[in-house]
Amino acid sequence: MTSFKTNTYSIKSEGKSFYWASFFLPKKNRIAASRLYSICRYLDDVADNSKLDTSSQIKNIFNQIKENESSEINIFFKKNNINIGILKDLIDGLISDQQNVRVTDEKELIDYSYKVAGTVGLMMLPIINTKDAEARKHAIDLGIAMQLTNIARDVYEDAKMNRLYLPKEWLGQVSISDLIDNKLDDQKKKLIELSIKNLIELSDKFYANGFSGMKFIPLRTRLAIFFAAKIYKGIGEKIKSGGYVYKLERIYLNKLEKLWITIISIPEFLFLKNIFKSYKSIRGSFKNENI
Image 1 (cartoon, helix red, strand yellow):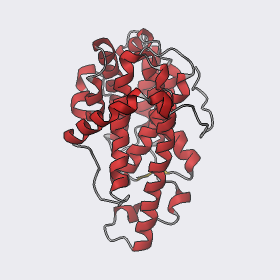
Image 2 (cartoon, one colour):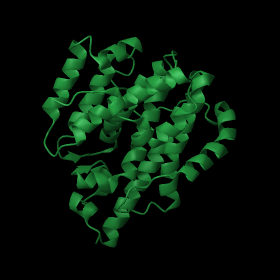
Image 3 (cartoon, one colour):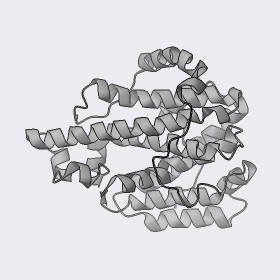
Image 4 (cartoon, one colour):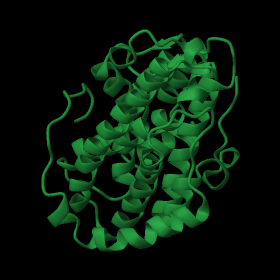
């Protein structure tokens, strides 16, 4: 079984958008956030770096973390007051990726996005010194927004792994093989691009809920989270400005684009409370979101 080592997973090399934003975190918070990233990346790699079903391995790793109080991950969770039940939700999301992924509808898409990313938002709260319980729903929605951006960015890459996160209620009869095929007919291409558009528009609603909760984050750590969200949202904006065109490649932001987004976002940061005033209910509740 692959063992976890904090220094094996570098946010600098593997989490470039978060690494950029982490410069704005105080050192203590930055170190803790990097360790949480390393843990999540480790689990994600166990889930993804094999063509075989690793469900049993993922479950065993979680049980070892939970039962072994001297394990590095267990110690980290206790030290930072992170409930292990939230990690279990993340584990459930990773296990769901071990089968041929076919998402039926928007509700299922949001549920999956909570498990693999909304949970990370929850786990980040104590790391950035956020204690108000009202912040939890905002943190979840920001995580969901980022995951929806991921899905819009990685449609082709996911299809090659036999994973289709675009809901069938959007795609109709478009199949995995259609997504991999570079000879799509116009009708299917339009359905794919309309689905990507739906994803970006849905993510925008969740980003708005995330931004409206920034007021609960202490000022010392708020700026980093805001920049991380804006840079991630920038990927969606780039897809939008490109007309939602389906490409057989990943969309990413270069350093200059990240710098530009950082600079032009500062006025918005200063007036966040005026721009994003309240939380809007756009999803159901999750079992562990208030533990």
